[in-house]
Image (cartoon, rainbow, N blue to C red; front, side, top):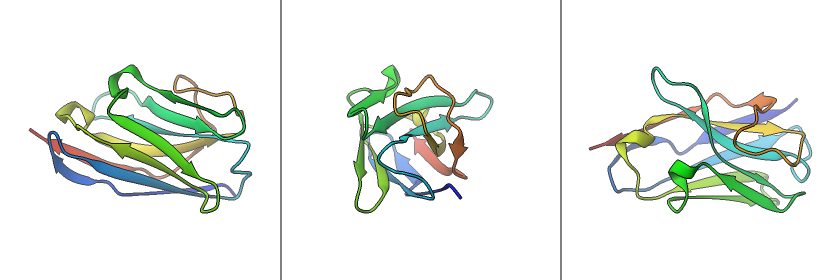
Length: 123
């Protein structure tokens, strides 16, 4: 059974940083694309960043390039999203997601989803 468990959300002031972690289990961590999506109130869910060990690539939404960094720890089967220079517009529920296609990007819809973690950035 695929399981994705997010942690690390919270409240931070604008300009601050947060680190989100996604603990993955139940699938081949090395061949899936694993990513982060977010959904703000009243808005559609959007892709933020994703990483593929098999394809050796990462993808970022334009809105977070230069501020967010995604990384993976194969031994721990964990994907981390380091978020710096946070803005109020980054406020959303952040979801970890995984898909068996190793070439997926942030514009694709992933097959498996975590429960989400709230990130709130105050101005």
